[in-house]
Image (cartoon, rainbow, N blue to C red; front, top):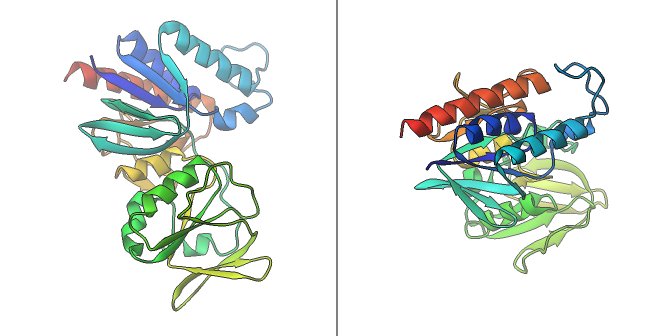
Length: 285
């Protein structure tokens, strides 16, 4: 029997799971919080609720609904995705394999507010180590971040580049930093460039010169995960066809990560599309 992993426990992910699990597919939901929905104090523009409901309450109800129907629910932070006969997911707690994967982890609402960062995107600043490590082989690079996602990018870069510095921008890292990685906890003032490459200027006045900077704050969103396996994206939006399928066989996306209206109703609709499309694809195998 084909199996499906849904990354994300919000409206899009749960909606997809309701269709796949009821169709008899082995369905696993992997989530690490419910994202922006948890911050919604009251939702009153969604069908079926006579009184406002908090985003957190709606999210927890959805997870319980999926669990009751038979979906397996795992709390883990997915940091990478690849392909080896099946789609493979790397999490903080282990690895997972599936015939079909639906990305539904939402879309980041904010970017790091570091002067010069956006100006150097595509010019040495990258959001995907798997995609761009090759361009910095044998050279020093920096990873911006302090959690599991940053550690994943560090480990991806280490075999390729000359050295990696983990820059936490004044924060204490929540992970065990490998001995081969330099840790720099100074606050960042700006990202700059000169003829030799990029420079991170710190508020203390010091400078770190590198060939490339890899941004890995927080957790990996759907678009970051999609890029790691070669799926087409446009900014933070994953490009999908009318069935929510990406250009990678077996990989689908739904919800905020596909762009458009960032609303629960739209996420539920796209989750239903993705779920039914996976069911059809699985039955056609």
